[in-house]
Image (cartoon, rainbow, N blue to C red; front, top):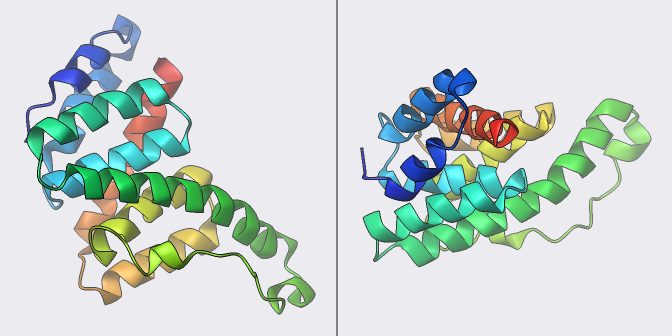
Length: 176
């Protein structure tokens, strides 16, 4: 597990009633099935997706310290994934929930080429997108990104870790 001093400082501000979240924040980034860049990138995307600059800044500082050579690319993809998933989860959740063929047959006409051209790699960007989709509860997006990851050879364990990070980030944001 990478050193996460900024996250550790923020984690300690959570009240004693949230001891479980404090412990989860210290363990979920351990990277059992994710690289350090992937784990911290997923956390940053999730924090930005849920609009928590305080948590995003702590994770960004720890990413920069742990991975100075790749931090800029990871941060760039985390920002892009959070923003694009903010758009996509609204649009595709609407299409899924309305359940009308008349909407499903219409082209989205929403630009999202960054998904195909990440600064890091396709798997890392998809992991970030999966985390945001899980936070939004968009079934279509969750299935699409998990399917893309499996096709890329990413294990279900890695997908599970990304969603665990998103869940703990959401809990921490509520606690903060």
